[in-house]
Image (cartoon, rainbow, N blue to C red; front, side, top):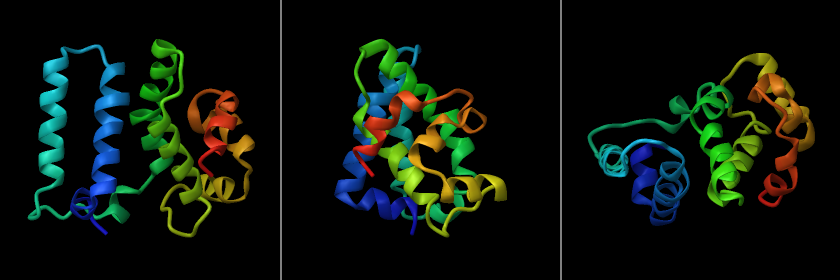
Length: 144
C-alpha cells in the first residue's frame, strides 16, 4: 500500500536498491560518492515509518514518469555497457502489465491505448516514449 511497506519487504527492497545502485547510478555522470549519498538518503526517507507515500498516489501518470525518470537510464545503460539492464527491463514490463489493469490513473487516451495494445505496439509508440523502443520487445516480453 505504501513505499514504507515496500521497503519493509526484503525482496522488494533488495530489488529497488539493486536497480538504483547497479543500473541507474552507473548511467549518471556525477561524482559517485554524491550519487551514493543521495541514493542512501532517499532509501532512508522511503523507510521512514512516519511518512506515508501511497503507491496508488505515486502511480499517477506512470508512463510519463517512466519516460522522464527511468527510460534515460535504461537506454544509457545499454549504450555504455552493451548489455541489457535486467531490473530496469523487468520494471518496464511491470509498468506495461500495470496498464493492462483497471488500476492506473493517467490520461484517458494513454490508458485506453496501453490496455488494449500489444507489447510491440506499446514499445513502437514514439508518442509515449519519444522514440521507437521496438528493439526492446524480446527483452521486455521475457518478463511478461
